[in-house]
Length: 174
Image (cartoon, rainbow, N blue to C red; front, side, top):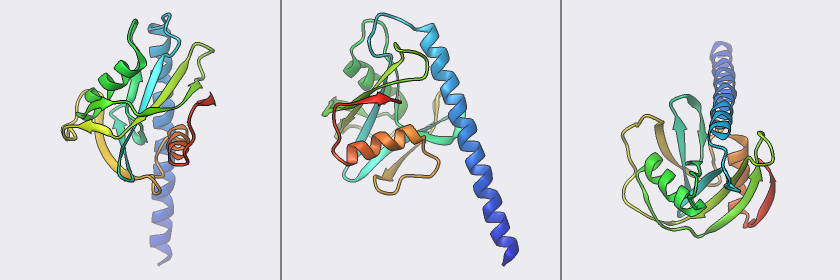
């Protein structure tokens, strides 16, 4: 029995280290994107909470396989936040958003005042979940809003909890 307990603890430790390593890689990727695509946009990035009943959709990246995040990405020059959200969700999940329901908030990232991310939410989407991996996303999965995985980005967890708790128009740090 002791041996099984040690293996379980060891595996939890490995998963936790993997998650923080993955989150570091995601942070570096966002930093590179920020510096390469700096523009006049007031919002540099967007994340989307896709809601189906009491479930939310999370994705895992090839370059950061130990962490789950919300679908999203950068806002292109002269692209609206809604258009960026629709494009990113289609690319990363296969779903087509019909309309954006609202905004949870806008958050300042770690790369300076111009590094700002909007978090939107919607339940109005159609299509089917893309099951095949692409060049960016290796996995997509639905999770109960009250039972999120341990390997979720802490910032993404806070945004999902804000959605669940009815918080809207929030401002702050990512």
